Length: 172
Image 1 (cartoon, rainbow, N blue to C red):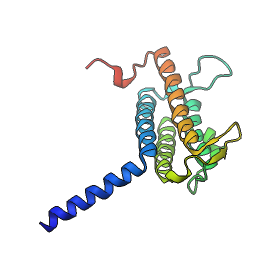
Image 2 (spheres, rainbow, N blue to C red):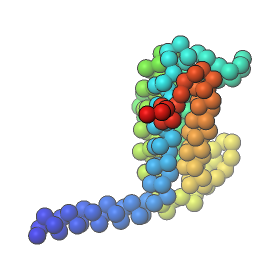
Image 3 (cartoon, rainbow, N blue to C red):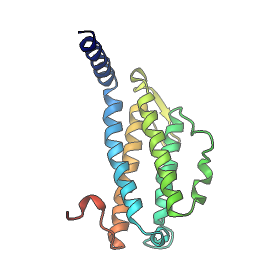
Image 4 (cartoon, rainbow, N blue to C red):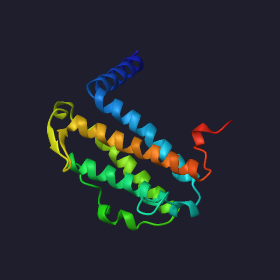
């Protein structure tokens, strides 16, 4: 009986927390899905394709992936979450090599997913100056999600242009 009571209490506390942080959980879930697909695309490109760009003056595959990573850190920093120790936001663009780029992307994804859950529900309506616009903390979380989704679409176009089929849409 004691075990059942403990299981009930843990479940209740977890459910209560999830309900209290419902907006954060919703954004986190959608963002995690988009990030997972971006990582799948990053892994599907060959090392040589990382330097491909559709035309001069447009980000290469590598640059687009690192732009996503930098955006995660930048937007989170504006929301009061500085990048982790050892992350040089200005130096991200100098990362080379497929494995290093993917590692940097994954690290930024993990960081921003965790920080979204640290946004207090009571602060969702607080105004934040992102430099390019003023919006609420909730708006900032949505911008993070949109930024990842926008560049997922860019990378899908890059993949298709290079004969790379997005892994989730391949015939089984």
